[in-house]
Length: 125
Length: 216
Image 1: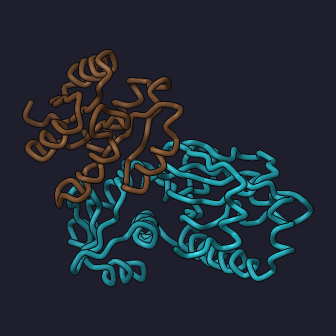
Image 2 (image 1 turned 60 degrees about the vertical axis):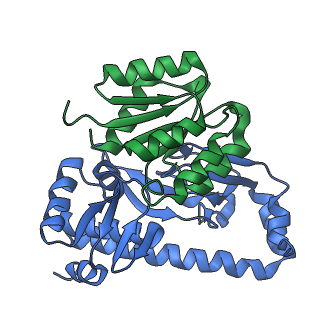
Image 3 (image 1 turned 90 degrees about the vertical axis):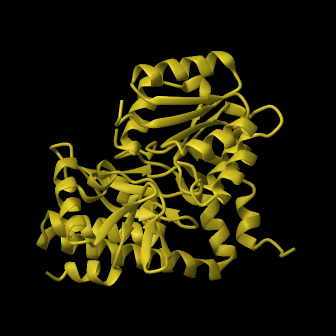
C-alpha cells in the first residue's frame, strides 16, 4: 500500500467511529483514529495525515479548539478537514468555517460512499 | 468595541443559513423572492451546457449579494438558466427582496455598495465572455486560476498559494472544460514552472508570467 493515503478520524461516538474506520480501511486508506481531541492532535502532528475527519463535539477539548491548535501549526494550517456535526451545531460549524474547513457533514445525513468520493477527490487518491 | 453598522443591524433580523460544499442554493429557472448575502464562503453562478459541461461566469466572495440583477420588473433576470451553488461551505443570509428594497430606500448610501458590486460583476462577465469566445482551453484554465487567485490567493514570499483545496475537477467545473483537458493544461503550466503544488494547495509561482500567458 505504498500509495495509500493517510486519514485521521477523531470521533467519540463508538458506532460512528467504527463505521468510518471500516469504510476507509476497505477503501485501502491507512486509517488513524482517536476518540479524543488531545490524542487526535498528537496523532495529527506526528503522522501528518492527508485528510482529517473531526467531530465537533468531543469530551474535554472540543473539535473547534483542536482545529484552532491545528491551524496554528505550520503543517496543520493547510491540512484539509471535514467537520462531523449534528443538526443543532450550526453556530459551531460557522465558527469552524472561519478557521478553514474543506466541508462539514451532518452525521444523520452521512452517506459513506459520498464521503469517500470527496476524500479521494481532494487527496487525488 | 465598535458599533455595528446599520447594515449589520438590519442583517441580524435574519437567521444565517449554512450550506455544505457543492449544494445548490438557487436552481436554474427558480423564481425566488429572496436576495442572498454571503457572510462566509464562496458561491458560484453556473450555466450547464446541453452536453452537461458546467461553465462558471462568476464566483461571489464574502460580503457580496447574489443574484446581482433582481430589481427589474420584480423578476430575477439572471437566474433563468443559471444556478447558484456553494463552491466552499458557505453561510448566507436570505433576505426578502421587498425588505432589502425598503432598507435601501431608507439608507440610499448603501445603494453605492450594490452598484460597485454590480460594476465588478459586469466587468468580470465581459472578461469571461471575451476569453470564452476568443480563447482555447489553455487560456480558460489560466483565467480560472486567476479567478481563484483573486478570491483565495495568499502571498507567501514570492509565490501565491490558492488557499482552498481545489482539484482539477473543480477547475474543470469553473472553466467549462472536462477534467482530462484541465489536467493536460495544468501539466503544461507545471512544466513551464508557472504553477506547482504545495501542502495540498495549488501554487502560482509567478503571477505576472501567468497573466502574460493570457496574451500568448
